[in-house]
Amino acid sequence: MIPAAFFTQIATLAGKELRDRLRNRWVLAVALVFTVFSLLITYFGSAQQGLVGPRSLEFTITSLVSLVIYLIPLIALLLGFDAVVGERERGTLELLLALPISRLELLLGKFLGLAAALVLSTCAGFALAAMLLWQYFGASATLYHYGGFVLSSALLGLVFLALALLISVLTRERTRASGLAIALWFFFVLVFDLALLGALVATGGQWAGDWFAWVLLANPTDIYRILNVFSLEQLSTMFGLSDLLPAAFASPLAMGGMLVAWIVLPLALAIWRFKP
Image (cartoon, rainbow, N blue to C red; front, top):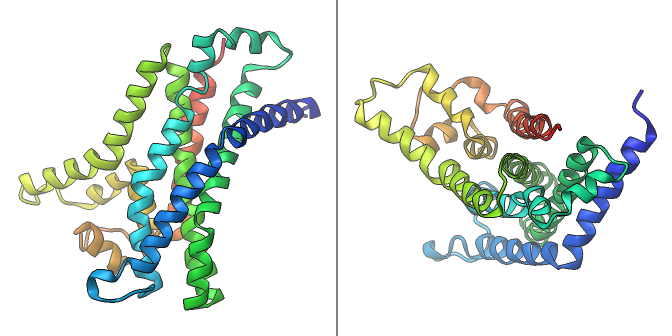
């Protein structure tokens, strides 16, 4: 049986991390960024068609998905890349480990505290847009689709926060950790899909097959895109891979489970590597 002190230590460390982010106004700054961009996209996203205000819930969420894919992974990586290596460089890691806390408690406490700050800023940043969409499209549609969008956005942030923590454990210098974090953002957000589509075009479609669609699951941002479209037909159109997408890709539970797996695996690797 896990002793109560284990959870107490983790909660104490997590609370400290969250208070630090609230004190330095990190949560407020990120929430303001999401608030401004989400309101602009929600209200003026159809301006080029001569319309003002949300055109449809699906169109609005699709536009917001593009914003989230660029911003949330970068914010999460910058938030967590120095969680451990920063303590190591400042010489405070040894001091923390000299206290009656285990390495597992330290790592989980840091992750949960940073995760709370990230989720809080994400939910707060999309709250005003939710109220606007509620007014236009009603409670049921907004709660289901927009609520799912916000939840999946928070999960995407936690994926990259777990990856950032893994980078922080594996590296010995903050400069190297920050470089790896930026490289990881470029790979998953920009390079991965371009490489896949380039391979498909270069081979004249010869590589296209059932396996090709499953490769998308190797990128959490693609899983996030899949999770926030409303039908398999829209999914095929979005990726240009008609007839290649398995029916399982249309299941929110399956795609949500893949995002959770993307959180658990890097975090488990970080815990394993952080052992003495």
